[in-house]
Image 1 (spheres, one colour):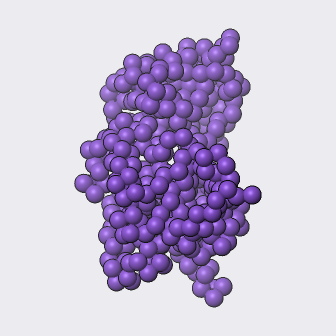
Image 2 (spheres, helix red, strand yellow):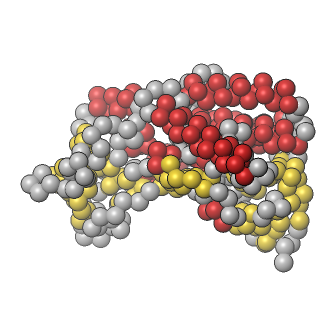
Length: 372
C-alpha cells in the first residue's frame, strides 16, 4: 500500500542531463515538477565527465561535465524543484500515475504529464575471462577514476573506439595509467577524430579490425589477447597479439534503458544506429502514450549535449499540453531547440543519427495518422 500520493504537473523520471534540463525548463515556466532517480546521486553521467564540452555557448561549450551537472542541480534548487534520489520508478500506468519509492517506502505520484529520461546502459562483451576482476565497463572505469579518484589498474587495454572509448582512454592517460592499445572491431574510428588524435599523439596505438579473444590471470586479469577479424567479424588464426595488462576497459556501446517504457505497452521501434529498441515518438518527443514524452539516450543514444536539448524540447511539449505555454510561443521555442540539435548533429556520423531520428518521428506520425 502506498505511503503517500503526490500530485504534480510533470513527473520527470531520471536526473541525468536530459531529466535535469527538462526540470529546469519546466520550473522556469512555473510548472509543479518532481524529478525521480533510482541512484543515490543526481547528474547521471555528467559528474564522470571531466572533459570540456563542444558546441556553442548554448551547449555550454568549454564547461566540463561535472560543472554542468552542478549548474543544473543548483538551478533546480533555486526553483525549489524536488529531486528525489534512491527513488526508482518501478511502474508507470496509462493514467500517468507512477509507482515509486520515497525514503525507503512505497509511494505514488499522479502527474498530468510524464517525461521519461532514463538514459542508457552499457553493452557487455562476452569472451573467456570476461568475469575476471580488472575487466570492467567504461562507466565503471570513469566512476573510479573521475569520481572516486581511484586508479583501477596500471596498464590498460581499451576495447572500442567510439566516443566513450576514446574519451576514457584519454582520461586513463590523465590519471597516469598506461594505455597499451585501443582495439576496435570496425575498420574505422567511430568517435570524433579530435578525441582519437589526442590519444594517438600520446603514443597509443589503434588496433583496427581487432576483437578480444580472451583475458587470463590468477585472481584478476593479467593478460589479454586480441586478434584480427574478417569482414564477418570472425577472428583470423595467426593474428593473435597478447598484452600484459591489469585492466581491460570495455566500451562497446550503449543500449537505451527502455524497461519502464516497454512495461507499460508503449509502441517500440528498433534502430541499430540509435542503440537498439527505442520508444516510437514524434518530433515533439511524444510517445504512443498520450502525455508521456521521452528525452535523452532512452529516445536514441547520442551525446550529453543533445540529451540536454531533448530534455528542453520534451519539457516544452509538456508545457504546451498543459496550456502553460501558448502554441505560437511553443513553436518559436521548438524551432530554436531543433536548430540547436541540428548544430550538434552535424558531421559524418552525427548526420546519420539525425536522419535516423527523423525517420523514427516520420514513421510514428504516419502510424498515428493511419490509426486516426
